[in-house]
Length: 135
Image 1 (cartoon, rainbow, N blue to C red):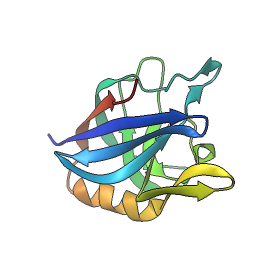
Image 2: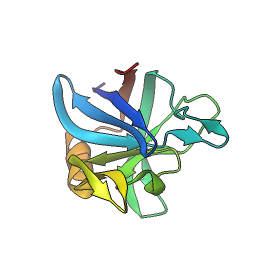
Image 3: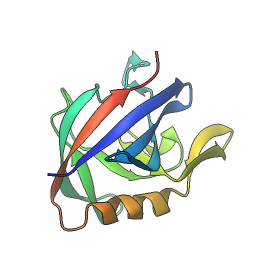
Image 4: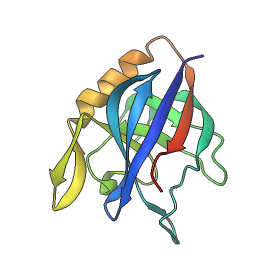
């Protein structure tokens, strides 16, 4: 089974920013919400290893992957989006960092999402390793 790694590199008011790697090759930047419900500054996905399974993203009608096995959470998807406002606790993918709507954002999200899906072509699951690389 393929393994991808999400290395979180920064946490600021506008979200948790990271890099997605396929082996040792970085291929996308990431953005996650830096809070969940009333738990300020706690990501909804603790560091660790998770099984991701192919799933239809009903809201937008396309296939993606769901991160499973996260304590107390379900329906964590990996999808396109630019600011933390585009996520309810999911992982957003982009090609670069930038500014949108007066927030730090990720850009070219659909391009990054299509690259992510092409790296997983023909696979129904993979392992996601989540690491924190900042104090």
